[in-house]
Image (tube, rainbow, N blue to C red; front, top):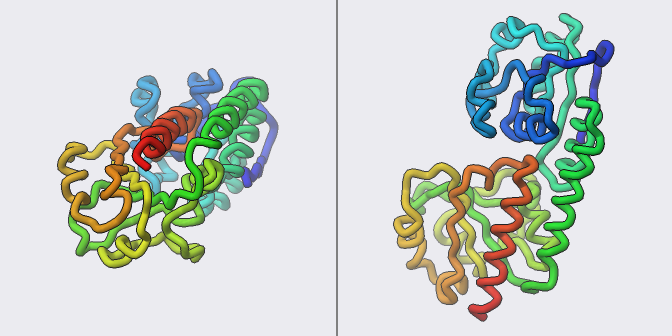
Length: 268
């Protein structure tokens, strides 16, 4: 769930440090971009984000750099909890936002809207997401969908895929289909060549944001796998930056996913 943990009083205009690209994008989407005084090196959208002071990456945030920005509020994901004691010591307000699952993303958006004193903006984003989710239903049914993370073309190294603990899995289920990876173990799944074949996926989606490889190169590497997705031509490569960022741009991912389902329906 989106968990709010606050210290101190709300300010007329907060000085916010956003410690994830998704959180940064949501703040800008709610018309509070001028409140952001710091973000991470991966926060590149919207363009104004690139001009904001950087405090590090996902796992190497510099508390010293953060402190110099004199924030009144730090919004972060649960993996940043090591900073909590430091923030408390300096009397800096903070909030933890979990963006792992679809439900927690929507709760987190509402939480951020409350913090930014823009609940209507948050509600509008959630409503757009929910509308797009509903549009996925009734296109295809009971198809086994395998989502691959990254542009891997060397199967000997193992392939990261979407397991059951991510919002992408939730999206597959809501669409009326199934995750081709059956195991419900909480760990991040890494599959071998043989394990990938064993999924017998009907639809293969490769999430490769910002990849330097062309779609043709990636598809060619996967085209030899003896799985239904390849035999039916249901292999898709998504390279847009937003495919890995669960912000308001999740709507764009859902639109793309809907198109994939529509194309796959025709290939049956």
